[in-house]
Image (tube, rainbow, N blue to C red; front, side):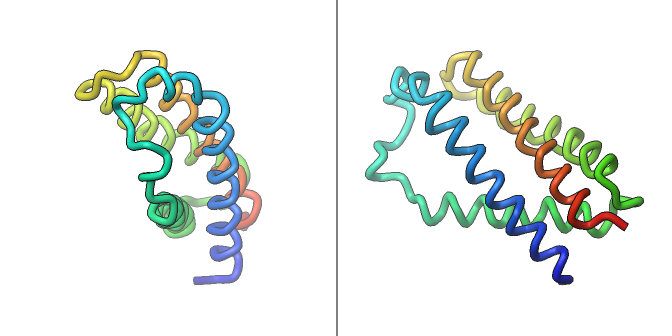
Length: 131
């Protein structure tokens, strides 16, 4: 891995961690409280695993961009992030909604939130890894 790739992975991980806190910890807090029967209590959540998942997802995002997206630019990063986010956000939000009794507003929030996060990550990789 190049130095730029490692920096991009770290920056995407940080961005996603901050955006996840804003989305899930602040914006959706009341929704999660209203549907508490669906989730583990906070003291049973595995935070190290959650950070590990985010790190692996960040690395995969950056490596897919680095290996297969040309040319490397902010524009292509944002386009990649938008398409990646459409796929992952739609499957996360509405895939979960199809089998879990979550409110449709939560499905939409997961979809839009994931899409915003991947567009931001696309801008980050495009900026750091540009040709």
